[in-house]
Length: 180
Image (cartoon, rainbow, N blue to C red):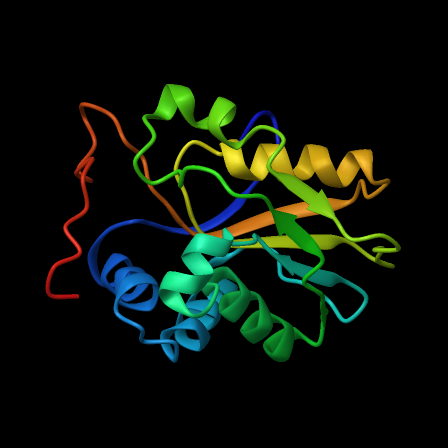
């Protein structure tokens, strides 16, 4: 759950799946988007149908320049191909600080007001909002609110991994991307 919103998650951000996410995001291994999409589809209790539409969580312009691609868009496109759901990419993210280095308590404030939707965007069935990793759910909550303001209410957020950060977590707060 993120802000009272039911989010489908496939895995905890650990082990092989974590390694695959890091290689996709920071190692340039775009082909892993297809594999992670298949793993997520196999693990979610529900999957998109041909009547549904898939939106990726947008990356900031800075991240797009650095990476050359949006990993959520790669995942969303692969999920679209696997399920027959329509793929659209109408969400726009304004610039600002990345969520990666923002502590959990400040994430909602950091992302507030950062998203907009292109005019005339709609969908027939459910809208599936796809991302690679969810930590606090602040990004998903903000996008669902933005979509609701645009008149889109049947939203099903889904992520490959859930990254729990707490004192008891087995996942370290800082991720070392060296060697990935």
